[in-house]
Image (cartoon, rainbow, N blue to C red):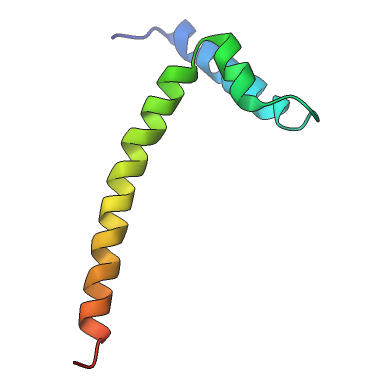
Length: 71
């Protein structure tokens, strides 16, 4: 999906609203993301990046354990 400059401005404003909502007691950033319509895209982006990072981190930790073990 090709996004225009205006789309990026809207996403930025929605992100600012999510961040501002976390400061207000009783209001969740997730609720604002759901209301603004970017909740699913936000979760998809987080899961995509999280799974890649976790796999790399787990692999590095495993190599560290192999290198520093005294077996």
